[in-house]
Length: 284
Image (cartoon, rainbow, N blue to C red; front, side, top):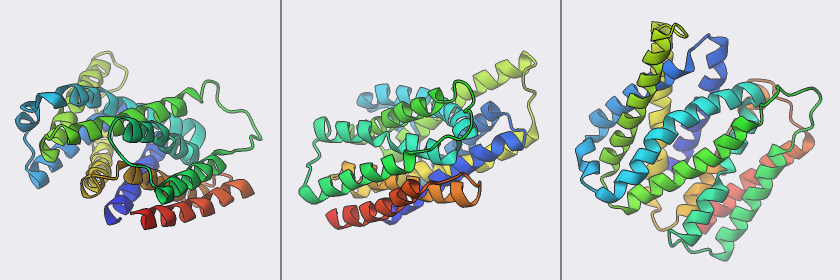
């Protein structure tokens, strides 16, 4: 479970950085582009990844291209969601993507649903719904709900793409590097285009922020996939426990660090999330 815990910590760190980006006046496109430079370098340096090794496995081409588009796109949408509806709701929307992931695990990826595993997942879903419930006391920024909905769909698709790459037999490091490089190129095409159009000048401040973001992003994805490798026969366990863990930690950070209001039902959801993680650990 240590890989899952590390993935959770880095995932919430990414949300915190995205929350702080607007306050710091950061251009998110440049930051995300720099993030993929750093993530690519770390993958090459620490994991000895080579993109050619991934491209040689033809079954990875489709999920790799999909990841190259999805990864930077979901980063930008997530930044919007964190800004408009907060860390708690964004992390819940992100982790509700477990519906997409679990559907793929049981229907397409050959996972087996045991009674204990089913109980843990069911408890996790109830916990997520309790944490999601928010009583509005003021107006939400117009159009703010499209962002968390896209976060929900996008992260579900990313989970499935990573599992498909693993099942195709491609080297973990080379596949990760290939996806990062595709995402990096796409991001910087947009960033340079915006700079030429005078919308956002290139800035060392943006690049520095992106470097920190990249280190956290690399840690998040690295340990998430490591969890899948260690528990290759139980993808639903990795999906569910990572999702619930992020909801739990993200809720606590949102409540205490950013003063996002939580109701009694939200706190009940946190307790249920802790219980769900315990059940799923036993289910292993």
